[in-house]
Image 1 (cartoon, one colour):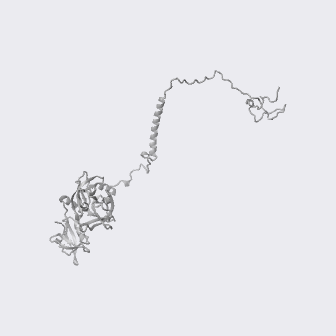
Image 2 (cartoon, helix red, strand yellow):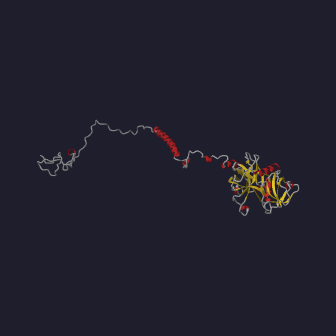
Image 3 (spheres, one colour):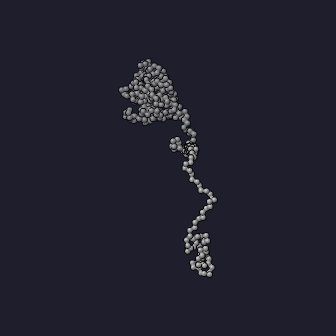
Length: 420
């Protein structure tokens, strides 16, 4: 007997089938034959899986906790060695990448291009300013006297140093010098010539390098020069300029003290207090002068400062006087054998008196004559004559032009050494 809902038959497309009419399976119910839940009206059934045959794979046996365990030491050793090798390779690669990426030692950033050669401008030629400084600076010293500071330069391997007289004035046992490398040495006073403002001291030190002395008669206006010294206690200072004038005759010193006379080399190199006694050097590194005085707009010496007017004693004069001091302990002073009027403002040096049998008298000069030129150089006053005469060595023959009344004349004068 059938009831129209055979569970093995799929449902039809109609919700209520008509007996005797053919029915089509429902499009919303596929796979009905294989679906145990295909008929919502069929009674529930639970299907249990068929037990597997005992002929299948055996179950896994659990490990025995009492069995001896395998050692992991070889595995750990292999891991450790591998880690060390990996760290070394990584560190090397990191360093190479850091250098290539622009980092220097210590992980700091390295700026600028690398691998470039030294530029030609940094390869200083011996005749360049840098080359001259490199050669001269080891011979320049800072002179210290009772707290005051001046400059000087080594002129012999025996330790002789030339400086200014006003630098060592009042020197005692505290006289010392310091060198460009910071070393110091005690110094002793050899001798001095106050009127020419030159002095010689001596230091006891091994390995001294003397300067090369030039010829101050060969320099010309416009030549480049370097000034070395310790201006305002700034040791190892170098300034540059040119020769501004030659034979600039000036007088310095206190009214009641020593009067100093200079037939100086004028330069516009920056020179200040403390430069006194330092060398003035030409473009070839040869000393041509001794920096001595400056012209300033300051009212006092303490207020004096560089305004581009500096004066140096010609090295030919300084060398001669230094040799006299070293050899005899005293410098010979060159004289013309006449007294001049220094307060008169006129073109030329008027002779106030002439010493009998002196150089001027021997050349036929008389009191009242006005010397207008000495060795071709015009003279403005008596100070100019004194300074120019001091420049020459005793025994030098110089030409003079002079005026006597309304007439002019010339003569040759053989200069002499002062006998006092």
